[in-house]
Image (cartoon, rainbow, N blue to C red; front, side, top):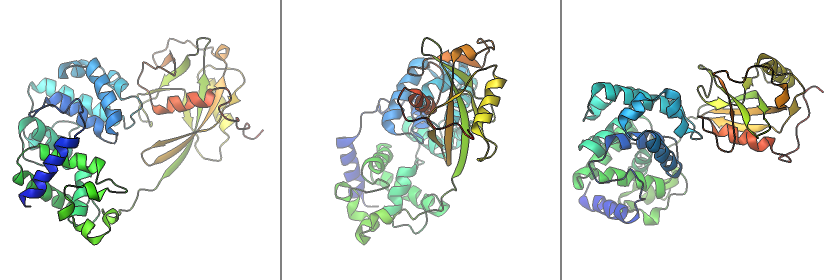
Length: 361
């Protein structure tokens, strides 16, 4: 690609770049960059910034993160979703601490647990001067429009074309800042919906814009079918306003996080009141259950309806000091949890909504 578009891209970026705390001069701190890149996956940058600062305050160095327990690393991720990221980050930190040094090439970095092609290329490019372009969703979308690619963005052919475009821009303006500028352009101008072409520094070379249909690219791909599920939950509070949380067992969705006791219904037609009573009995809870308003929650392609039931604290017969139970203030939890906790807390507020009738009378 000719030099002018690359230089315009860099000039635009230097004027509008958001001052994220991990955006220091090149070469960058690889630990800071690793944490940032992991958190930016599937998370908006403003939310990721807050979580990144929490994480670095708790684990200021790679060795702090490597020495921590997995559940401790989950705490700064609370509310972000996609908690598998925290487990993979922990595995990578432990492997790096054991290795004693950072690999410098994308190929070497990919051998670390939890490090995929994009993260490996980003670490190599931003921290060690590597020349493999880190191609994320933003760069795939830009390439689809600039080149008017006929295939969906995540096909191998489209990825190869995106890598070639990124390399050509880097050749015209050899700095890793070019790739970061492309990511910023995709996040702020060449957006998935309603791209703002008049302010785009690549507008003069964009084939999709020349066709007059930039939003028609990337070409659509077949979407994954949505799975529906129904869970019941128990909302047990004490006199101090704390709620009883239980660690979700391994093998289940949200495993390792702390949430009110949950149980999925085996079939949508099952009686939620019966399931809630069975769950309460298994926990040593006795007494009436009061239905609360339903809560909607999404986890990737899953859509979950949670039917909560309030239980009085005095109904708790079992020991409260078990390893998998804690009392926590829902407004300021100190354990790794999910945004589902805040949704359930709102449903439990007086007057939040009219409670649903108990199933089956």
